[in-house]
Image (cartoon, rainbow, N blue to C red; front, side, top):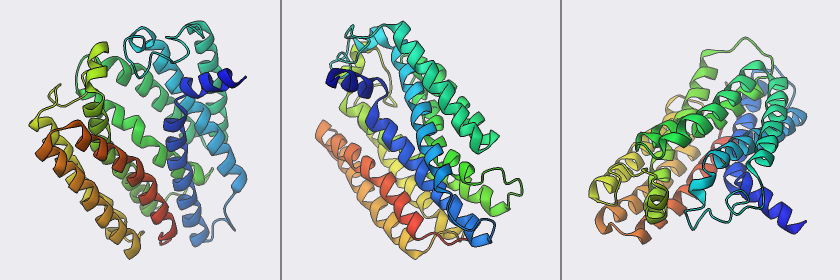
Length: 300
């Protein structure tokens, strides 16, 4: 039983899935607070929040499952992934496909219960991640841009899910949803590239080309630095547009400069240890920024 849960965790990439669901659940609460402030609902619907968490977990797990089916033979080549259940031979691709389909269909059905838009965007996210981003990883660094789109959809899905079947969206709703998407979209570039730098030797065994220049050099490091720099003004947009307070602005600025400092050290040192610090900083950055925004959210 312990091995089963271990394999299931690897199959759905539990830590990645948890981060995705966390992001969507926080923005659901932000969307709910907006509706409470407008007097459209009396309080947060925790039942819908639970549906989002379970549905989001299943949909994300399904996308990761399809990704591993497609990359099974490549995963055998990499030290980091060779012990996953399918490349290790503990699970067949047929079994993985059945699990992925069940998770994907049930998860999409759950999210569709919240509203049609949430369900449709979730399906789009699975298709883009599994069938566009995954094959592109061996062809071109443009894969990082493509992968950043489904990776940035969870905040958008969470906010839309909070709206339920409400059809009278206000301009501020589009602004909030778009900015939540944009912050996570931009964040993914230093995040992805730092991971690609750390794991480049392993990735090369499978032919993955994820660094901007396909190698660890100053140009690739410059892309990490520039994307971390762009993240700072983007993260200040909630305050600029009036739905975030000064606490989120201050925290985003400090966190962004901290993130940028590590990116600068990578640009100077061009070593794996500096890239690893950027990578770990990215893990903390996005959930903390979203949490602070939740508590410093100004509903209109």
